[in-house]
Image (cartoon, rainbow, N blue to C red):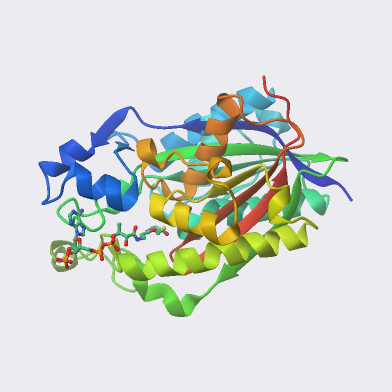
Length: 329
Ligand code: ACO
């Protein structure tokens, strides 16, 4: 059986910065409260004329350049997102057209865990022999769905995109993936309106039902419970232990969540990747963005073992253990 190995990576953050100081002028909050409770100092916002597919396109373009592949080399594009440009066509199809690809393209929606779910699709396609080269993109513009008068949510989210190119290889790259869902927990994090349950009406928009609603404390408790369990399960499926990890790359939702899971897993702080200070929670983009940060600053080397761990609405969670095989350029 062939394995799926990462041969290219790229990411994109929009230019526009929203700092904690900017938020102090918008809601009753303070830079001190936000940094102490979340570790976030600033986040990026997509420009008004940038949709999720535009972020995905730029990340995808950079990943293709990094991998040194052409449009025709790709057999499949999977985009993980929960802020699609529109209900249909899929963000993957729009991105496919932007990049001049001809391969099948579809979206996977698992909120902030979308990238890990999409990675599972890509890996399965390669391992089954149905595809040789696959692009997986995590892209979100969740700030489009945030109520900027709700201080409990508007301080958290930012926009961005990150992409991996995976290719069939004799050398193991993606070693193991564990996914999970608990639909009974759906109420703690949702965007109630805008879908088939509550289609957009003036009344619903005025009531703010198309914005993110979150029971922050419940999500926090869920995250610190599920991240260690998912990481340990994916490591076990890969025949590895926590001590084998070079890097733990958790979904960047809150620095306190990162600190708690590192402690519970017994991973030293310096092995836990964090870029949340400058990005906020970029949802499906956060894990590939964090890995690309490691890659571009020269901290990833062939043989390194990474655990990529996401969680989010659904509720959903997922962890992938990846052996890095690509040389730093
Ligand atoms: N500025 C100042 N005060 C605030 C703010 C703010 N921005 N937000 C809330 N507060 C207040 C609250 O009103 C509350 O005041 P009270 O004690 O007078 O009632 C107090 O601060 C404490 O509020 P909590 O909600 O208990 O604060 P907490 O420490 O839990 O932090 C936070 C809130 C940051 C949202 C945290 O719960 C968290 O990060 N949760 C996880 C969220 C998450 O990861 N979401 C992403 C999921 S991924 C996806 O799929 C989209």
